[in-house]
Length: 487
Image 1 (tube, helix red, strand yellow):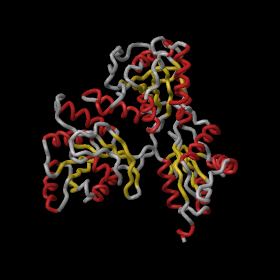
Image 2: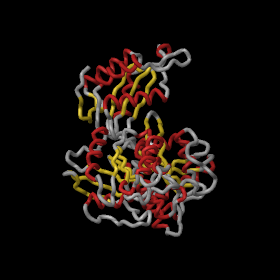
Image 3: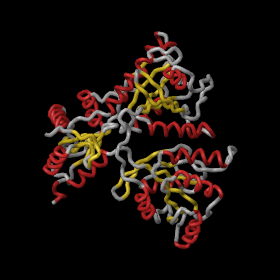
Image 4: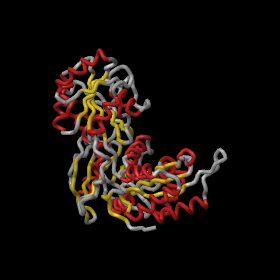
């Protein structure tokens, strides 16, 4: 098979023309619908899915609408305002197109004042969004808070679809029509609770959203790579940034949570210029945060979305917490290259080091692939090891395996370690391809459903064979329909 690789940008993602043609021929021979295969490759080969933010005042039905879009109950819904505090992301599909839906907390006037609170949450909720659904309670009409949000949305310049919610019947459509006054175009009369009108609204959403965008990270040759420093409050993120910068760039204080705004710093380290982002610490229970801390956690999540590499700082002097694991999961789910830095290493005695190793083996077993550095932000110990770890993670993040080599590897796997027989059937991997990088994304085509344990086995073997150090892998499986149905 031709192993020629395109650098990306053609209609086949990262597959060369000859490789793509041979791959499609193989798919047809195995009984797969060529159109479906093409769609699977396109979906996997593109960068991040387009993002839709659902915003509005408290208790206008945002989470109910999110559940309606998803077709299942995911977001917590309760008949009182303020239930949703976190910014939560889900993956949705409509008319064959996939996108991300972000459910946000409601905007309200509080002790910080309407301008401060609304502006802060609006900025973070829509910062990473490609389009916005603005939900208004049609039975109440446009309030002063709604008017303030409209101004912010206009300044953001993102496409907006106006959802007039709680229109449960024809008699309430006049209420929806009144929302033309907001100046956002047609108000889509919807009942998120009953599903009325959501199809038309979602059609408008698809028009507003871009197609899954081609990847842009690293597109500018020689441009600085972007690194997000993340971790619990007071683990030493600001101290680390100051140490690598060689000067006091950001405020450091013993009080946890000194940093609230991310500080972007262009820093030369190891002969290379990097863009470091010092982010606010993520609190243990985000839904209990208020004021500036709450908005800081949202902004941290936004920084991770923009980054190429996440350096997660863990306080080695304390036990690895659920909080640490959640922060690592956030970086992995965002598809970022990952480095784990254990800070305050100089303060550890032999006993603590022993127990830390045991904790790493049990609590962080799922990310054994992430490069590890033991550092001291205070003394500068082992700082020179940080850049090689980051470079290793980036190299893994951008690695691509040619389709021919991948299928030889998969053939060996199927022969030596076949899938367990279930219900008298033994599903097997027929062929596959790596459809994208940053992070590496694989599409495997199989004769039947592959159990989660076998998928994890495939991932482990991929890492053993091809490296992929410092990067999450995304593996999707497409099952061939029974040939009888295709006739």
